[in-house]
Length: 211
Image (cartoon, rainbow, N blue to C red):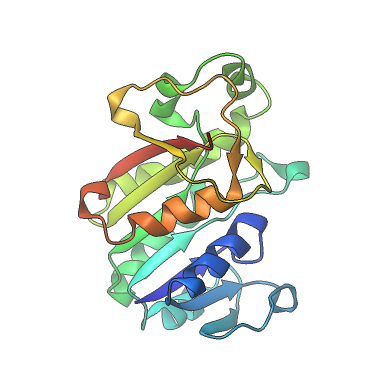
């Protein structure tokens, strides 16, 4: 299976690439700054901008699924990223004939606010508000598409080791996550990769945190 990744130079994206290669996947890492990527076996690095639809389509054509771990920098966390990218990505995937996508979001975005507890809910209503509004804009385009999508909503991200059994719940269940849902990036990567071949996760929103 060959995976097309967006966000491979970020901390979560690096973990996705690392774990994916360990599992035997081939990777196409579409990145703006290839110098930030290590040369790795079974990883093809393609330099490109997010607004270069044609180049992205060409790089994606031989792939079976898309993994998105993009995020805005802290200094500009409310910038228009997903709101502008997702409608174009849906079209690009259609042209490249790729239907499967697993995309990283943020717990508290959209209807997953119903899964959030205090004190984390304070952050969702204040400093995370702009960033999550951008996520929500983009996710609406996925929901309206005919793609086989899964959205993963972790709590605050940390650089910890992969844990044995992270907490993962279908957001639609209404399950209330812990009030301090610390989430290791390694667990996020593992959960995203684990969903790739699970048809029962198609068109699902999954909230998660490390235990």
